[in-house]
Structures are given as structure tokens and as C-alpha cells.
Length: 436
Image (cartoon, rainbow, N blue to C red):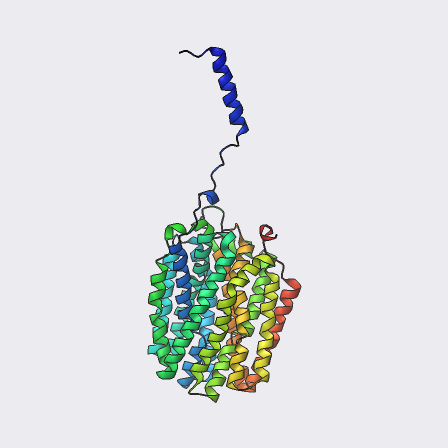
């Protein structure tokens, strides 16, 4: 039956009115298209952080203990550690720039872990200055790539909104890895030798790479992982550096982290040497305890730090981390004996829990939308390498010349300066949308 023309017109008007009253279909955006990461990818990142913590544990105070047992002087130990720090200084910016421009952060991280494992094997097999110095350079290059890669993978998986709790989770698993490795490596050092520590460290590279492949590459948004809001284009490192160094908050943050590293880097190596001198047979086991106890604190409280960073901001937590450091160094200078030294080292867990979350988080705040998140991580890493390169041999020289207490007091003063800079110059970087 034919519909009358008037009825047909009325139907069209009703349809038009209904269309006008309904909201238009939303325009698709990158965030709307984005699906939450799979459980497999998140678990893969968890265990990659765990085994990466295992690997890096062997390159801390165990190296000083091992080289001391090989009759190295404190000056030579400080010098070879400084070689690695200088290499880190050179590699950090290129490493960060590399991650900003690669299409697969996962593969870059895998290659870096392989290099770190190889460096541990070299140290174990050839404990002579040239070989250890080369291994330190190889380790520095691998770390310069893998450190920003972990943060980039995290950001690419969960985006900025989920970064703070994700970094807390990364820190928890890394701390658990550090603690587990410290116990295992301490047992290896006690029952076998300090050399065995580095063979086991080299082995840890295999499960780390295995865990990495459980992260689904398609779920890591490349643009987000680079700190950008659009698909990244290859840009010059000088242009990116120029942009970053015009940000006052970034410059202040670099100074704070450098001062922290200058005060913190030599502390545990000095304590390790002290323990080796006083209790040679138990030195490796005591160093293991000095690592495990702070890592328990980090594992327990890092997720809380991630939540607090959203709730109260970044600056109060930075002040807490910087305030504990000079207290710890002063206590090392004042107290003696193996048990007090290990107990004091527990305070390191407070600073470590805070900075493990806040360093990449504050960098993400400052560089949001620039596409240079990982380059900025490299710049901060360079400042850490420079600070360690200056501080390690200087502290070793002061300890050899004036005694270890004098070195601890010098480090306490440096840490106090970092606290003052944080208190007077560091702004709050928490984004407005996180303020409730």
C-alpha cells in the first residue's frame, strides 16, 4: 500500500528530531582504541623486573668484596668502578635516544641483558684490571639501554594514567629479585668463592630473556612508550636535549639525583671493604644481608610509594628519600661492628623504595607529550654516572688517606646538600588530573 505523501513527510521530521536529540557517535581516539594489556604481558614484565634485579645485584658490593679478595687496593677498586661509571656517562644519552627511536623496546632490552650477562662472565673468568675494566664498560652499555627500556615498556603497556602503580610493582619485583639473588649469591660466596658469585650472575641472563618474551609486543604502544602523543618521528638528539635543558624542573631534578648518587654510590662498597677487613670469612654473607634487608623494605613498600605519589605528590617523597641518606652516612661514621653496619644499611630501603618509583615517574611528568621520555632518562642516567665517577675514587682516596670515617662524613655532607636543594628548589610535578 502506498504511504500518503504527508504521512511520509511527517515520518521524516520525526526521524530527524530523534537523530538531533541523540548524541553524535564519539570520534575514535587512540585512548578509546587502546585495550588493557593482557595478564601474560603484565606477568612477563613482573618477572623480567625480578630477574633483571637478580643480574644487577652481582655488580654492586659483591664486586668490591671479590676484588678485595683478589688483593686489589682500594684505589684500584675505585678506579675500575670509575671506569664503569665513565662508560655509563658516555652510554646513557645514546641508550635513551636509542629506545626513543626503536620500534621494539623488547628486543632492545633482550640484547642489553645478554651484554650484561656476558660482562659478569668476563669478571668471573679473568679478574685482571684490563678484563674487569672492559666488562664494566660492557655492563654500563647494557644498563644504559635496559633501564630506559623497562620504563618505556611499562609506559607503553599501561599509559600515563597507570604508570605510578606499575612502577611500584616493577620496584617490588626488582627488589624481590635483588633480595633473592643476594641470598643465593651470598651463599655461593660463603660456601664456594666470591668468584662463583659472577658465574651465577651470568646465568641469570637466561631466565630474564625468557620472561621478556612473554610480553606481547603488539600491546606496547610505541608512541606512548616514547612519551609522545603521536607516532614518533626520528629527531635529532641535540634538538631533544636543547628542549629538555630549557625545562627548569628537569635541571633541578638532575642536580638532586646527582647529589644523591654522589653520596650514596660509595657507601656500600666502603662498608663491604670494612666488613672484609674485620670479618673476612663472613664478609660476603654479611654483604648479602646488607642487600637483602633493604630490599625487603623496597618490596613491601614500593607499591605504597606509587599510590602515595598520586595522593600527596612527588615532592614530599623526594624529601623523605634525600633526608634519610645523610643520617645513614653519619651513622656509618659513628658506629662500628658488623651487626650495626648491616642494621644501618636497612635505611637504604627507604630511599631505594622512593627513588625506584619516582625517578622514572617524575621524568614522565616533566616530558609528557614531548616524545623524549627515554632521552630524558638517559640524561638523568648520565648525571648518575658522572656523580659516581667522581664520588667513587674520591671516597676511596679519602678512605685510604684519612680513614673510612672521614669518607663517611664527606658523603653525609653531600647528601645533606641534596636534601637542601630538594627543599628549596624542586617543584611539584604531579599532573593536575591526579589531584583529588
